Length: 351
Ligand SMILES: NC(=O)c1ccc[n+]([C@@H]2O[C@H](COP(=O)([O-])OP(=O)(O)OC[C@H]3O[C@@H](n4cnc5c(N)ncnc54)[C@H](O)[C@@H]3O)[C@@H](O)[C@H]2O)c1
Image (tube, rainbow, N blue to C red; front, side, top):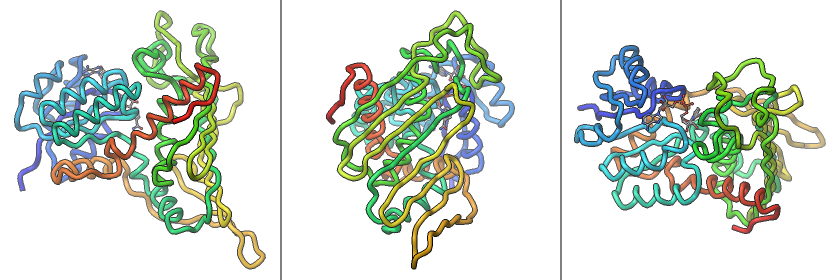
């Protein structure tokens, strides 16, 4: 069978996760790497043996051989690039968050539907083995009635690229909530089969990074800092969400003056509870015949990026909407926008 030709736009940190998965996949062949910084695309082309590079993604849209495209650029560019790709008849896998706000997300969804093309979002935890095991247990009723979910995505010192796109609201749409919280909320909504959201309350604090020169840290991902840049995003967030099912609370910190990371999700049910370590394994707690039980399931993990890309490629070939399709994930963008709105207005928001 002839392989389908794909392209990757944006050759930074996340791109190799897509690239390696395309290279492993028997159905695909990478034709282009694109980056506005030419050396980045060229370096990856040499490293991964890809024939063509471009600096302007619009050029590759003219190539009829290209069927599917990964968009791995900063948040602020997701909407424009994805819409241009969809309008050119390409299927798109756009990295998370879908976009900076709901206006952009709806425009992306509209472009996908109008062009009858697939638009998936990089909600890679939907392909994580543990997450799918938790979802199976919830769907089977092992936890009974789930009345509350708590999640924590807190780090001691984890602000990325101080003064760069990640910390500039106009380029990212927000800080720790939109960057890390997006994964946690998405995973929760997936496991709960997208409950109806009723109200959202939250506060987003811009604290530890705002005095950039005096932010003390050991290392910085997406660094080095640019002290002439901007820092106007949340580095701590808290929220309370009511749904037609369980309530949800969240705490997130790129940085906090507590020297411990806490990155987990707890599902509380009347028959059992689950504590899922983000990116790791989970424990199931229950009571049976007068005994308190703590179960640590053991299983092997599949490669979630491979599964994500394989799902994308197959959904593009069949033109079928799968679990990471924009229609199934935009609930997360709605909730994040509502948390920011609630924080700005200082009151609860109804959806
Ligand atoms: N799924 C995940 O777990 C995960 C992890 C990290 C990042 N991400 C997401 O992936 C996206 C990229 O993050 P990153 O950490 O790789 O950033 P990065 O800054 O390392 O890489 C982005 C690349 O895009 C290039 N670029 C910017 N504008 C462009 C344009 N118009 N055309 C072509 N190239 C352009 C930049 O030059 C850069 O090389 C972000 O939206 C981020 O939220 C997802």
